Image (cartoon, rainbow, N blue to C red; front, side):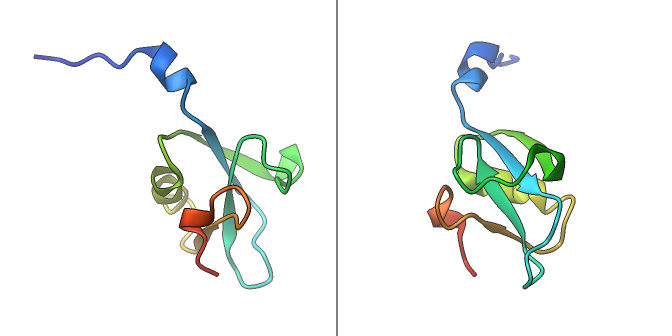
Length: 80
């Protein structure tokens, strides 16, 4: 039996982005759409829609070895 995920449900999940430019400590920071501290659009890489920042962090690790959640919009994924 195949389960179908409605696009409507996905549209309700937050969209996440990762900063293409690392911070001084080497972290590529993950942000939730609408974050006040999100970098300029040209510096963002879209990660997708996720139920929480943990899924977004896992996706960002496919592109960058050192990632962290934003202190402001992803506090449960912020480590450094």
